[in-house]
Amino acid sequence: MYVVTGATGRTGSAVVDELVRAGHDVRALGRSAHGLASAAAGAEPVVAEPTDAQALAAACHGAEGVYVMVQPNYIPDSPDFAAHQHRIVEAMTVALAAAGVRRVVTLSSWGADQEAGTGPVAGLHRLERRTNTLDAAVTHLRAGYFMENLLGQVESIRRDGRIAAPFTPDLPMPFIAAEDVGRAAARHLVGPTPARPGAPEVVELHGERDLSMAEVTAVIGRLADLPGLRYAQQSIERFVAEQRAAGASANVAGLMAEVARSINSGHIAARQPRSAATTTPTTIETFVARALLPALRAGAPEEAAR
Image (cartoon, rainbow, N blue to C red):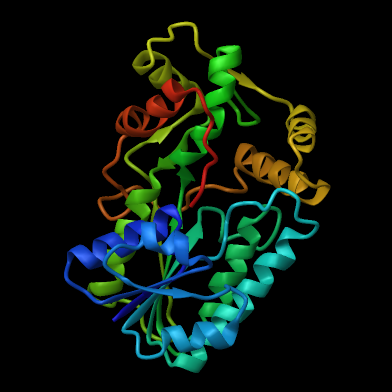
């Protein structure tokens, strides 16, 4: 039996689907019975708060392996998002140790090699360090920049005919689809175990190819039949002001700005060479056709989620 935390999220639901389709018994953890009913078909649903170490340990008892996801998305009005992440990391680490789990695959991020200066990615750095202390074979999947983040641009595309973000226009980034991350996690959970206790494995996931924001904009413009679509790099100050106006706390807006600065400066960057093991199948063209264009045609922006 395998346990999947964050089973209602995009990566978690993909892990569940992949494992169930392969015939494995799966226990899907989430905060809502309603959400689990729709996102974790074929799995045993378990409602547990991510900060409840006792409930998590009970859910993980007897598991062959556990997929660990600590919320990487911002809670917009959080006064201290890092503290929120810290509580989840501590509860999960305690639970995994108490349950005696021997195989762990975490959702980490590019940039998690850095201890600080990376916004919420610093919380995933801590997740890596804490799970490395377990008596378990641990694999950290450091995913690149999620394609799903582009769904937050739908309203800007419709209203202004532009994609606006604080990233340098021509900077290549490892764009990846959340579904591909989840499927990779499932394969690592059930496959051979190269990692051993005390020697964690790190695997970066780079997506199908590196893309700049200018290149992504060109793809969207072509597929959406919007030849005038342009990319506009926002200043960090403008970006923060817009996030604050949209309801983000000062803490969260500051973390978002830190991510942008770190990506632009190379502080957040892919470190492993691209290879067959780090490359995933979904192209930006496929993602735009399947996810962004329907959202654009529906006339309503969608919030990115992992």
